[in-house]
Amino acid sequence: MMSREDFEGTFPTAPDESDQVADDYIIEGYQHYDAEAAAEASDEDMLTTGEDNGLSLIDMRGLDYDDPSGRSCWTSSASTR
Image (tube, rainbow, N blue to C red; front, side):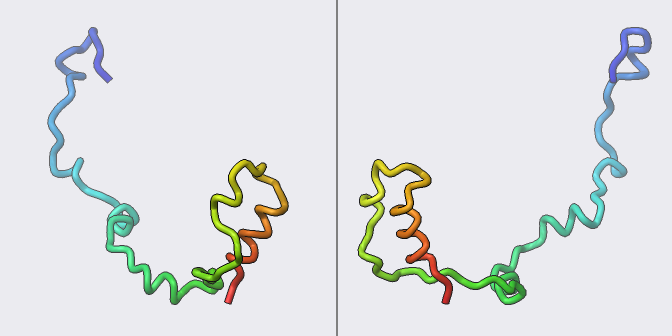
């Protein structure tokens, strides 16, 4: 923090080598994300996609968020294998 009392002593300096070191957990966060490995390691069921349930998105126009007819559309099309 800069101070009027000690302006020269508190003036910011350019970063040096010690300011440019990252901890290991930061470096790990920038590593390539392997989606296939993450999917294989997951125990979650995949959603079924592409099934024809007789509804389309336009059928849900105007429905409330909690409308049961909209819920049945998503739950029938998003069933697990």
